[in-house]
Image 1 (cartoon, one colour):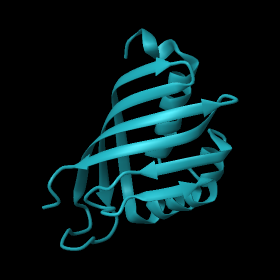
Image 2 (cartoon, helix red, strand yellow; image 1 turned 180 degrees about the horizontal axis):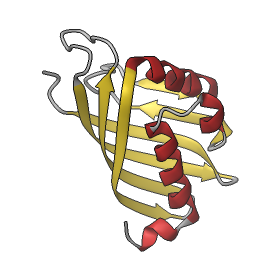
Image 3 (cartoon, one colour; image 1 turned 30 degrees about the horizontal axis):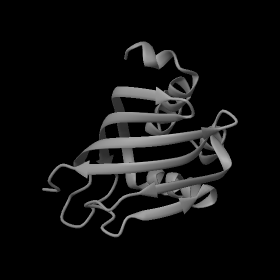
Amino acid sequence: MTQTDQHPHVRTALRYHEAVARLAAPEELAEFLHPDMTHSQLPNALFPAGADRDLAETLAASARARTLLTAQSYDVTGAVAAGDRVALEIKWSGTLAAGFGELPAGHVLRAHIAAFLEFRDGRIIAQRNYDCYEPLA
């Protein structure tokens, strides 16, 4: 990282992604998230229609991830902060716990992600993800 990792919101964003990566319990993730938070996942290979979630739906999705993946990693390769906004560039990988479509258990999915976070009161109030998955084969 660069000097931007000294920005308090970047530090929070990095800690949040570290918790997500280790498949932390929803209660732990909730500490990073504002009660009014929204998460938008733009259309991609796994969610062709995209997804819009509130806090409860976001935490439920994180709980589901614990059953779908045996491990995942978020390699944050870049971060930019301006006021209450943070943009992250991330390389993600996740190992399937069970088969998914034609993909067997143990298959490693990979994606290149742009995540845009907005903060209020030191917590994430909005997250927008642009997930570009590598070929699912």
